Image (tube, rainbow, N blue to C red; front, side):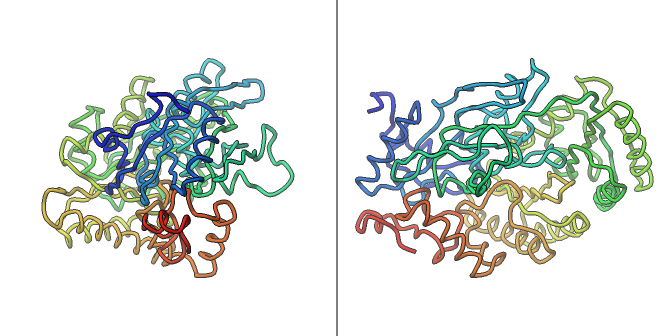
Length: 465
């Protein structure tokens, strides 16, 4: 059906697809590469005949195990469905296949004065299909919103091979918001084969600011004060001292390695408004004892500051062979306390934990350094991550801001949601995927979602709740 180069089934080839950006590994039985919707339908129908689980996969940059084949089976890789099908600059719309790389869409839209707003740190590699599955965010979503705010319509394939469409190029169509429901469903309800996205017009002026602090608390309090003054930057990113040193050694972005923390702040809009807000933020930073307030003087300086932020995960690899990226949310007023709790957790487990995160919306990304080769290190890292998520829940936050639930946090869902809510989610899942073949063992806790034992799939033809 796909030709001799349309699939992989040799062990040494499959090992490349047993993991994503998280810390778990499970080997698939086969990886297939469709080139269009018709081939996706054919694959789905063939696997349905043989009761085989299927998992959609983009670039594998996800951080919660979303594309790991927990029940084995077939991974459908969308890397060959990578065309921008149309770009309507006049109406600020584009239609893309799921394998289009996030940043490539912005490159294509740039000559028209447009860009695609959601910008995960992995935007040079991650694909729009994966962004839709995980409802990805990024530094600039403080003002622009996450992926769901920029998806207008979808073409999807159900696990029986039925093709259906949701939404369209016109916003706010009548009927249920199935586009919103499927965006962020982590590939557990349907496979996305086409996406209609909203593009955003480039702003008149941009200012990128670096605030340097000798105190983590003062840095965190600055974020709360900025939002209290009703200033909404497009991005407020915070890096602590541990992260600063790793990033600076790798990228030479000009971050001060002796600081306790920095804020990377970006403003966009009309020139007069941006200038006024820059001065307001300068006053706020001074009141919070910032030791330095630096405004990028050119596009090159701006790009260099963002290079440090966007390449942070790669910088960590120079220091630690393994690391575990966590993703939790706390109210902005609780950021300082959460950072103190993370430090206590680091000391408790004897693991270095660095912090780089979207401070403007309280989306924490503690990065736990460990060595998988040391007995018990991975288990300690997971335990530390779970304690941090419990703290997020305790202070009124959430267990994910953009990385999704996947197979990493599905048991933690029971601490965040009631049984009635989990049952409702399960009912929605089973409406789209009654035999539980789509990405089984994800999102819902054991007992509320698909069982993870592959043998049950093979013996009964379905996985029961």
